[in-house]
Image (cartoon, rainbow, N blue to C red; front, side, top):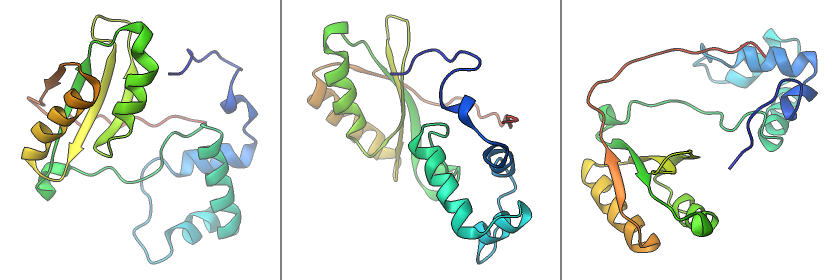
Length: 161
């Protein structure tokens, strides 16, 4: 899916000082106000349109892979689960496209392991997990291994860009 990161290589190496400050400002504490982007932009000495243009560029260049809220889906009545597949190497790209086509798939990662594709399923209801697993199995012809959460930990990680 992606190559191993090397220092000084890839899209992060092309960040200017404003992009770095923007990334640092967006890691937690996003303002819950009527115009949050305007407020963040002002704190960085930018206009709102410039901030949004830069954020779009960071996403397009895959410096950021996602920007959005993190929800505790169970509190809203939903569910999520870590899942894995054992995908034959020759079929990996096809299966990746099939799995990623499901809107319930939040993340998908390739791993060097017998179970070489790992992904997170998030559904609006607990029964949606079983339904989505069955649909992925039908689409791929492969068994989905589901690993439900036993205990939750909160680890906040902030990176300096």
